[in-house]
Amino acid sequence: MTHKRYHIALLVVFIINLAGCFFELGQTVILKPDEYRYVYEAKETVALRAIAGVIKEKNMGANVVIDYHNRHVDSDYVYSDLWRTKAQARVKKLNWKECEVVLAVTTEKSNGIDWEMRRLLQKEQYNNLFDVIDLKIYEEMSKMN
Image (cartoon, rainbow, N blue to C red):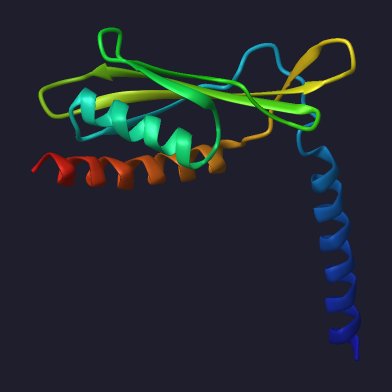
C-alpha cells in the first residue's frame, strides 16, 4: 500500500513539473537567434543543398536561397497565426573533407504592434535538425554519383 502512494505522489509531481514546462514553451524573449554548430564530412556545396532541402521540407522558411559564393543559405519568413519563422545557415570549410555548419532558426511572435524574437527550439531540436541534415547530405551525395 505504501508503494502505491509513493508512485501516485511521484506521478503527480511529475505531471505538475511537465505542465509547468509546457507553459514556458516560446515564452523566452531573446535579442538574437541562437546559433548551433555541427561538423559534417562533406563538401560545402553538398551541405548547402542538403540544408536548403531540409529547410524546405520542414517548412522553416519560404523562398530558400543558396549563395554558393558566400556559402550561405537564407530564407524568408513563414507565417502561422501570430508566429513567423525563418532559417539561416553558414557553411565553413575546415579541411579537405569536413565543413562546419552554423544554423540559426529565428522565431518571432507578434505582440500586435511589433515582432518579439522568441526561443522556440532548444538544443535537442537543433540536434534533431542536424541529424536530418546528415541524412539529407547522404541523399545529395547519392544523387551526384
